[in-house]
Image (cartoon, rainbow, N blue to C red):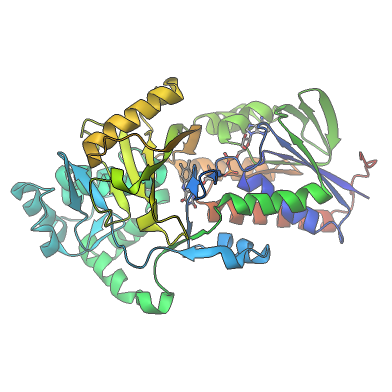
Length: 477
Ligand SMILES: Cc1cc2nc3c(=O)[nH]c(=O)nc-3n(C[C@H](O)[C@H](O)[C@H](O)COP(=O)(O)OP(=O)(O)OC[C@H]3O[C@@H](n4cnc5c(N)ncnc54)[C@H](O)[C@@H]3O)c2cc1C
């Protein structure tokens, strides 16, 4: 009795689901067929090694606190590639009115924990600094179900602090507008703080004291891979392609069926399968899974995605006008430039890189900037060079520069997201043999995607072993 599973999408979510299923194929008779619209696997994960150093087009790090990515890296035998952040560099800057300013010490996940340290920052006017003390006395904000992260922070700390310090730091994770992002999903700890005391500052201080010291957790919060995050994709792809069928450059157009079997229609072929793992962006899942009911499709299509572009560039050391003494910078809205952040790669990571070259990556795109990718690569590069001149005083052309275009790359967890996901979970549970996974559910990080894919594969395997009526299919290869 063989199960045949179609995996739709070959980003990290689809690859991990495929890997888990082919790994189980010695105990469970399972045939895996993976469809990827692009000519390459990995989705958003992409590392350019062409210049003899690592330029990441997508993720450049794994958060140590979420272990799934590192566990997978070790499981796949890539543990020797794990690399920490550069121990000699700390912190990042906020670029405001033509200058870099230190992020005030003690700001943790957007919450100030050392009010005195904010007293000296030039990022805030005197009145904005005084307003921060409001947090110590204002009553808790009533929250019925959910509200935006921005509205709670604005209420407690005022607009100046939010616009110039909290928002650029927090928005970096979701490329989002914090005045629309769900508090319940993106910062559930703040709901917890609110329920325990009046002041977010005091509760954040308490949480910080309760954390183990940096020494015992082994240094920085992030790690990367010396030969690029894409080496994880390459290793997964090798294992999968030995045991499964992989169709590259073959978008799935629609999937029909829904009860006791599915037909997968892709460009040029139709395949009958017993199970479907849709590891697609939400709007694609809504389009392709034709059997979903209209309210489920609407939830999926209502999840907005931000268009992004990352520029990876390599400069000669001599072109740099300044010492790169932090990991990079973030740019608040309203500074007159489109760049939202920059990473000084050599300062952030401990790569065994060439010392005479300075690799940099710059981010463009926010949730409310729909026209970003109408520009050609050349136009984006011209903007990058102009803004590098303004921000860093670099006027020389880079030796190498590349634009990674990421259309609809980052799902936005808007207010009410948790409720929407509850609906999706219920809808999915009523459709046997269907798993929908990906960054739009429970976390955008690579580890979140891996955790979700692990869970989906393990649930399918459990369902099959408990299922009295397994479908028998002829082997297709
Ligand atoms: C610029 C950027 C930086 C990031 N940095 C970090 C970081 O440092 N750390 C971190 O943990 N996370 C980071 N993330 C988040 C993380 O990289 C992503 O959330 C994750 O890689 C998403 O993986 P996925 O497989 O769910 O989706 P995707 O990578 O989007 O994969 C979906 C795949 O489906 C394919 N597809 C679409 N339609 C079809 C179809 N009809 N048929 C077949 N295939 C189809 C697509 O081509 C794509 O390959 C970052 C994201 C971005 C955009």
